[in-house]
Image (tube, rainbow, N blue to C red; front, side):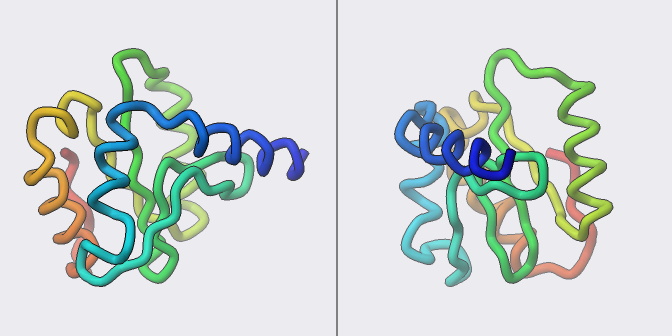
Length: 117
């Protein structure tokens, strides 16, 4: 099962959505708060869109269609395992990238709980 998730993560890295590519162009190379992000990272039974290990911050981009119940279960599992999750709609990434980057910066540099975007 683990090997399947790793292979799936590789496939997802090769076939990122437009929103993921846009956000990755700003997260890569420690451009936000000097923090290192990885993309399409297996975490337990899930694959996170983006992960910054040190603060255990997961950044997810929700497309036009996504399953709220599944997202809720995933977020609950990640929280129970010490991860913070911040979610953005793909339209936010396309239309307000600077605001998205600012929210990620705040999440990285703040010890407070994350606001719901």
